[in-house]
Image (cartoon, rainbow, N blue to C red):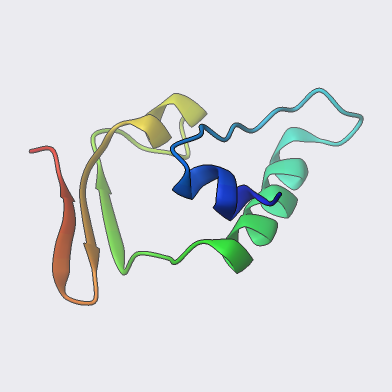
Length: 74
């Protein structure tokens, strides 16, 4: 079973840094892997700067893909 199958079935995927890798490098590796399985948005608006902390990644307000709004939490 791969991540896309789990996601499509309503499962929750997580990222963990319980390894010997530097966190940012580990995250880059994980995201490259997920990029193969998940489509990518054209633009994401967040309520916070994701470079200031991972918690801001969870504050998604608007996602646009293919010129259409696919997530709207304004």
